[in-house]
Image (cartoon, rainbow, N blue to C red; front, side):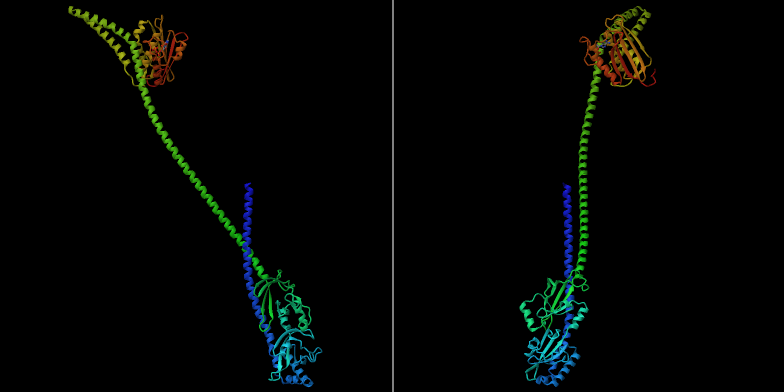
Length: 622
Ligand code: ADP
């Protein structure tokens, strides 16, 4: 659809261009033609000048001749005595001689009745002599005292000629006694014209062509003449009863007041034009009512106009092509600018988006930073809480241990009391050996009590560290020492099968707490159990240290196994268990990068498996 529209659009475009080119060519054609026509008109005028001058000079040569005849005494005498034959012969010879000398066609004298009384052609058979030409206008005008000029065809020999006539008077008497006539032929002029291939004619007052360079033009009329006019010609025998036909030239248009464009089909060889168009330039001849016309071919003007039109068309095409190209270039430039602007706009939008995104990112980053700070704070807080919880768990263990520790301390205290009383007695008796033996025992008891309180203090110590190295054997020793009283009281056997020199990457105090937890749980499970046994195994497996605590107690119920490590899960009566021991132990182990799992042992009882990263130091042995 749009393609068809663009096709019709371009067709319209082409049609417009063609119209402009044609218009331009038409304009150039007209301008060229009118300027050429003006030139041709000029040229035609110059030719007219020339032809007028030659015609005038041809006629003027004879102008005075009729008047001169009046001066001849013989002529005057003959007019007085027309029947005097001798005189007539004399005048005839005189006229003949004059004709030969001047080149006129004929010279003759008429009496006042119009009869020819002497003629230059007196000896020729068709002599005018004796003829009466009273009806001829040149006689009629001359007899009334005017000199006359008349073109006509001779009545005798049908020879066209120009008649110059003048009245002859009786030597100053003022009375017209005759008429002198000089007939001249303009054939020589015509001959020159036709030889020069000039296209020229002379029309008389009757619009009849009397002289012409083309023979077919001669005695043609310029337009159709009315019948009464033609009748009059017959009476005056001006054209000797010749049939006058209109000139075969078509009038096309009036070019100026005295020039018009005509069409005339020239015979071959006359004109180079195939257009048959000519400029007809006309001018009245002074001293007569004749008109001289020339034809000038318009072919050169037309061919020049055509070539100029062609040139103009080419020029117009070039200019239009230039304009189209310029327009195209401008359009392309505009497109380019638009594209650049669009690109810049897109770039600006992109920049704006980037800025917005950057701002978003900065805001998000800021938020993240704040969140990180918040998390760090929360983590620190959590750690503190955890540490406090661990400590609280430890305190709970200590609380559980306190009864047995008090019992543990009571024994040496009672012994101290007895021993110190006895020692005082022995000292009073002077039994120094026994007294010193007692004091030694007292020292040992105090040392033992110190060890118990030391271990307790060390256990109760609030550890902030989450790292360190724990020698497994020593840490186990410490933990077992703390529960020693319960072990002994419950007659529980502890079998240790740990590899020597195991060192784990873990805070020893916290590992001790974990072990005390696991041991107290085992002790609880082994309460009142005959043949109670705790087997502790420790080994290194690659970069891990694995420790298992297996008791032959009642083991876990299915529910216990599921909730074991959850906070506040306990199966123990209130006041005995808090349900935090395993939760905290698992958390401590996990902090150290280890694991704590529980299971029922296939041979009965519970088994805890503890793994910790092995310390890769010098204490590390396989
Ligand atoms: P508490 O000792 O205060 O109950 P724990 O978290 O240490 O809290 O233990 C949770 C529970 O796990 C105990 O109540 C007990 O039921 C079970 N448990 C722990 N150790 C053993 C064990 N060695 N044998 C049987 N059950 C155990």
